[in-house]
Amino acid sequence: MIRVLIADDQGMVRTGFTVFLSSQPDIEVVGEAANGAEALERVAELAPDVVLMDVRMPVMDGLEATRRLMASGRTKVLILTTFDLDDYVYEALRAGASGFLLKDASAAQLAEAVRVVAAGDALIAPAVTKRLIHEFARLGGPRAPTVKRLAELTERETEVMTLIAQGLSNQEIASRLVVAEQTVKTHVGRVLTKLDLRDRAQAIVYAYETGLVRPGE
Image 1 (cartoon, rainbow, N blue to C red):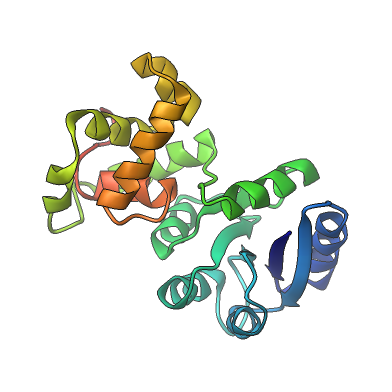
Image 2: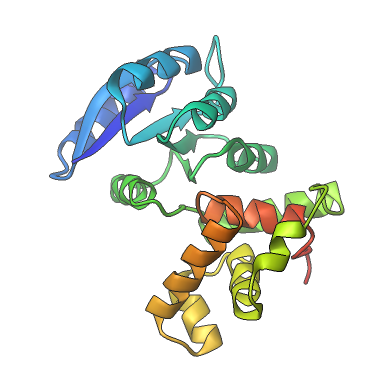
């Protein structure tokens, strides 16, 4: 069972998500929180696998709560928001979120998002990736001080990393490189391990912040 905590300041939203997710055979909603601070307390108490985290909440917002969660534990965060803005996408992923989903997503998309994030992958829709790339273009230039770790990647791993940063799925990368999808999965795993990255979300941010990939390339 995938253990889920729902953090949102709107009671009706929490109830709706709880009712739907609880109907899934492989998902269990173990608790709720009305703000970021409460979410931290509940995570420490309940140890969920995934937190559905709203962005705008009183006391402590979802981005700050995500940063603190990533610094102290292994719980994964799926950001949920009604706000489709570049800065939320960018800051949520930099804070350590494994996925970004708008609240107008379908119930089926929500359940699948929870499963994807719980499995250790990242959920970044192509449209979200495009907004993230636009944000890097606006910021201009690499932000990370060093690219030393990139030298540890093989030529093929660097190629895979570049395609990840462009938002391609494993299947799309396999098609582009004319290799088996399992081979791509192996390369992705090695890239994440060598660069000490948690998932594809962090890989995309890292690729642009080090300048491995630049907007428009």
